[in-house]
Image (cartoon, helix red, strand yellow):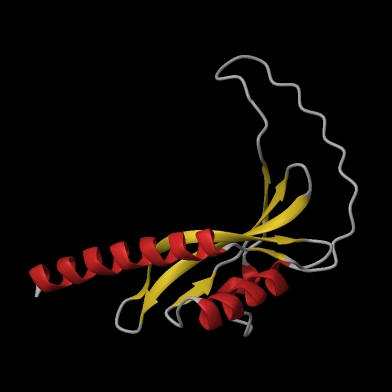
Length: 133
């Protein structure tokens, strides 16, 4: 390999949020979005990782984000719970980051929800590990 990490090699994807789509049949989709992207996908991932380390748990990190196009454009950064002995255990939430301002869309309710999901996932993972060993 050329020294590029796995995170740097993944390309961001684009998600169209809150757009109703037909279950079957023709789809005619015309998109024109104009915005300034001042924050790269990798910078958004790093910013979210720093936030979750400081505010939620050092056992969490941000994963490569998706570009979401809705009422505004933002990076949606998935957050995974990790264990030193297992690596990434599972996704416990996501944090949106404005592509222009770099502002995180975080509330106390969101951090509590991420913590709760992480605790549930950790408990399930511990039970699986205990029963397997």
